[in-house]
Length: 335
Image (cartoon, rainbow, N blue to C red):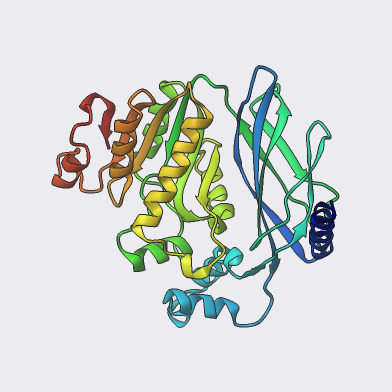
């Protein structure tokens, strides 16, 4: 009996310590939400995912120059507009991510929910909600010090979803050239890949009604990507970016990118078990390998694989033929 009492007291003490460690958001702390998915649980309820970052802006002088030096970018060689782009696009890399922060969100139906305490600036939770009347589930920071709002996108269990890579599929990035990649990410004006709008038209003609952007890009680039998508009329969708807050992990290994993409696409498959999927990527790195593996593993899930062939070989390059060995050619399309 004493042992049980001691266990309960220890549990209470740990819980109390955790509550004491937690703190509310301060006036100089901000929340960034990343649009995520919502899916059926049963006939009446759905699951809605919420992902957030909590951070404090870095105001010390010289931080932008230090970040540029970390990436190997020569600030003295930049034009004024390049310096402005670097400052704007690197904003979320130059912040302090906050741990042990508590906050609440409020959904459109006025339901208020508590988010888990942040760890390394990150907080995520899946909420059980009543089935919505439309596909967009809006929410906002409750009692905000700094306004922040976002949404989860609900898709029915049946239908067609489109999964898009971003770099060199939607946006010209030149991932295989590190120097060019950094310039295209932080310094140059974002440009769409030639032919991608026709691919979106094709996907829409195939009745895709849900879009998911799965990329190895870090979540810190989400605000800039969102502006780029809006400017170019790219369909609204959920974002599945790497959620690292470690600058040393800015350029992931090929293996880490493959793992991230596979895990996120497979999660989509499991969240929408009756949906068909169109997978759109490029031949630059690992998309053909990832998509071919998924098609072999889930042949009934993958409706079509579309690859931006950077070598303009129409899928006949040695690499692509090897990647798609054994995959039915009727599910392959190159542009």
